[in-house]
Image (cartoon, rainbow, N blue to C red; front, side, top):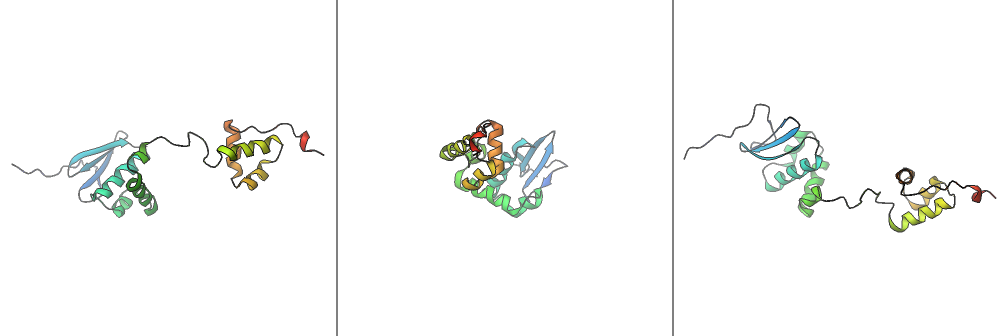
Length: 157
């Protein structure tokens, strides 16, 4: 049997001795020992985090090599690897559990905030009382999840 040397396209950027990456027509291709193993859209950050974490966990490359190749921080790579080890592939591709809602303004808190808005209390004071950012409440109002009271006559003595 004849051995074949690994083939990497000319514009391949090497992550490690064995792993290379290149982009063509908006698709990022990963090559291990000359063989294509994974590809994703160039704007898909979750796929990037998944495959680089997978490579690191398999020992194909190291965290520092991913950091140097892609110019990402140590913390970013570390968080992705930790998520991959603890929760697996689904953490990168699963449904977002928040379903479009701010994680701090749900359930009873949302009802309390709406009640205070109905009484005409200011968004700023509600935010301080509830321990959330004023911008989070304003965003929920803008999205229609909270309704700001237009009747301010109840707050005038």
